[in-house]
Length: 260
Image (tube, one colour):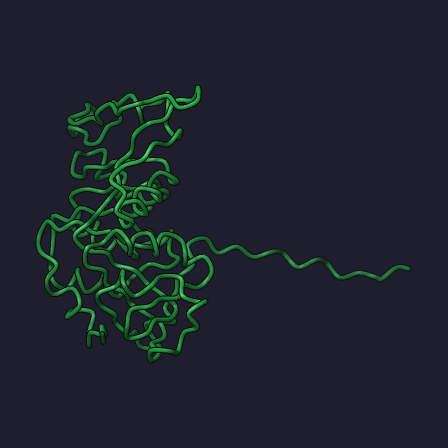
């Protein structure tokens, strides 16, 4: 039952060329940076990534993207990642963009053993009708477009059929985990991490704090250890390395006489 692996490199040692990965995180929050760096060090490429976005500020999945290690992305947000946009428009990267809620449910459904589901999101658009550019030809034309999806009517409303997602591996980051793989996520880092973890056939979690079994109140567990196969304990330095994507500060109010 002890799922702790000594190093991140050891944890990803069997991830092969061309593997599919579900990766947690949203922007720079809750991103398994240490595991991603370990994959980069191994030189693995041709990866198919399922994640909300593909990294930012040369961090997270942007490390693998910039090195040309990612062949396909299934996600819902590009953001300000200029290298992502460049590779996509140049025909170097295949991209399946889907509604964010649909992405979340496809991951959850895959992890729950649900092969497909119907949703109203995307009905009447290219999401359902097909024609979204998955890959460009590098000259402005579309080399590969999304196919049309099945649409059915229930109680007078149309819904589009979406399939659950299962991947070879999943990489996630948690605030706390025990040796059995039970995980707790902190605040906004609880974004896509539990869903990605459910979708992976082999799920690897990097944890900021490792505790012994029983060190987490059962009521506080966000993801049961049944979904996690390997746990990597981060050093204090690794755990504290958290970048801010858009730093904003408020201007202090000018001081003046107090009335009243």
